Length: 113
Length: 111
Image (tube, rainbow over all chains, first blue to last red):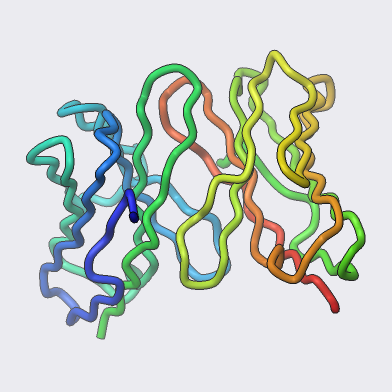
């Protein structure tokens, strides 16, 4: 009964080859987030959607884009992956109302060769 | 920079003992705090949260304490078990609907 589902769990891409990571949710939450987590570090917010309203963090590279075609799905596109983009990518959701925690998926581990 | 940080990178405790994980935050506007547990290869898992208008909140075997005067947050785990071994993150909201994580503490439970 996973509520935030990320596919695939492991993704290998080549340097410079575009890659898309997927996230879906069954919680009907308004807000969806993408975080990047490198080894032994804290998750770092890349951007989030409140409904269709896109909010980019100031230090997120232009190489990272996102799409949210509907409430349930959100995608992370990396246009030209570099070796430094190898990381765990975490999707999360929240209701966006009041004080509500984020619910995380189990992530996609991206390897860049 | 991040508004939330942790004092110790690794905490080792004996099974059955109580664990205390500490966290300092810098943004006095932070109004909501969450503790997450992250096991290897998994996403962060919600443990407990607290709003800034509270100073203590209890869950099952866990207690969070908030001291706004010194901008300090702690997570207490009672009767620590091997299954509690993980990395623990504190995180805060500042009203932007976005969560900022601290650097994490690894809890190791010795049998």
